Image 1 (cartoon, rainbow, N blue to C red):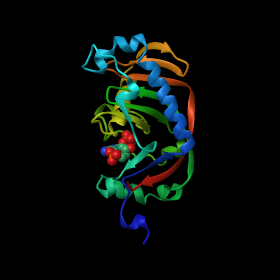
Image 2 (cartoon, protein in one colour):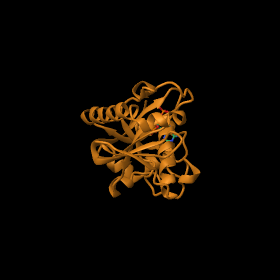
Image 3 (tube, rainbow, N blue to C red):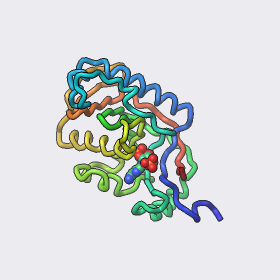
Image 4 (cartoon, helix red, strand yellow):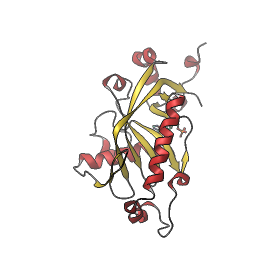
Length: 219
Ligand code: A2P
């Protein structure tokens, strides 16, 4: 009996190939290393952590997260709403095991998570669940499909990885309301903007193209 008929996975998603995982981790580390030395970051430190007088070493602050991936559908072994419907979609079956090029267009940091925004192509959007944004943050209900697509790069102690998508959607909802963020600095990697409450977004000058395989994790 094939495994897919006995149980559903923890989640479906695009799994970055090993070489590009290293590259993305390095880019993220470089960003964190620079961010916590910026005067602007130090100025907003009280928004970031309650221990206002202390410095923050962002590389220590976030715990790395297993194999880098962009979740499409969290199934929780079939317990999540819509899990079976998603797994049964012909497009999901057809593209299972195929290679894709994901485009990483931004990095973001909040007091809870650090992640990369993934800008999905039309083809990739065919694998994106219709309700992914709606079920997350009410303010995100009107954002375009795929807005939540991200790679979790790290979480602060005690924070669950699904928070990364909520943090991204919060920033995108602010942008949609017309808040462009306070442009803080042109960095080598791109332009850094501040959205208040410890939320930072680095729009990459050159999006990072990441090879990934559409598959699932049983955990
Ligand atoms: P993310 O996609 O933001 O990284 P866990 O380790 O908590 O079981 O999660 C496994 C993966 O599924 C993680 O990548 C996580 O977050 C994602 N995930 C967990 N819970 C949810 C959820 N309720 N909705 C969407 N994705 C989730």
